Length: 191
Ligand SMILES: [Mg+2]
Ligand SMILES: [Zn+2]
Image (tube, rainbow, N blue to C red; front, side):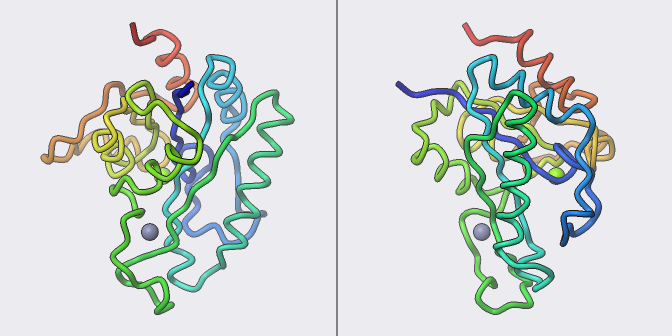
């Protein structure tokens, strides 16, 4: 049976957006992030991270480091009573320094490729899923896959909230942070 997912952006949503995070010492989780992930899991959602990592395309760090961060986050989430069911990232950029990554891919958000790959791998119920991020380009994925969208005001979110895009991308809710998004989600079950 298909299951709904919470698709989480990483930088600015789970952890502070500290520019390009190229070593674990620069990764600082928001203090509420692990609790929020546990609440999502407890409510029956798969938790899947979708993250643009243009730092790979810029040659600042490799794909293996992105995977290292993913393993670290999964471990922290498990220790906190939750878990992370999937982690998908886009290493590409149209302006990539590394030629192999200079492609017009289908996975760099706002494109929905990462979410679609996750949905196929994990048998996700997209219309019952929700996308949470600090940028409108994260939420554009929600519109493309027919899921709900929550903008969090951490990271770039407070600024983004002031400048809604004119392209039809919208938020079902704007929340202070990821724990606020968890509360909103639990308060707004689909029929
Ligand atoms: Mg972000
Ligand atoms: Zn990509």
